[in-house]
Picture 1 (cartoon, rainbow, N blue to C red):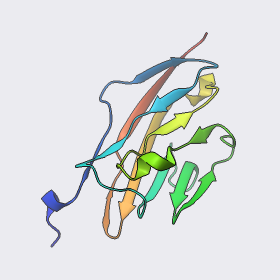
Picture 2: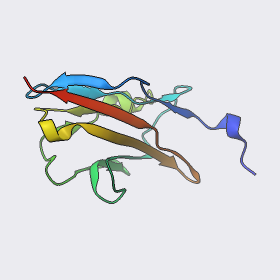
Picture 3: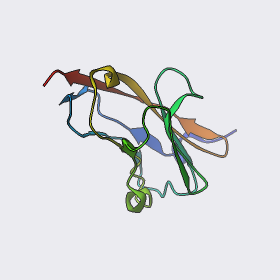
Length: 120
């Protein structure tokens, strides 16, 4: 039986993140207590787990279709457990729910970050 309290929690804002079209926006997500996310799998996705927005696995980064050149993590911040996603040049259809899925061996969490996009 795995003990809950040894596992980190993923902390995300409870309120939606609000931005305007054409802007860059940060979707915040971090491990608490602070712990390196480098050995973990980090997967940002919307509706479908397999259709990821961004995937970090074993030091490799992959961007989902339509997000090429628009999404990134902060590699140096991974050591501090910061797995926030930077989304550039926001479009209206970027609005909605994003799941911040982080897993390591049998542990995982995937809290939701909501993004509201306003027309500029």
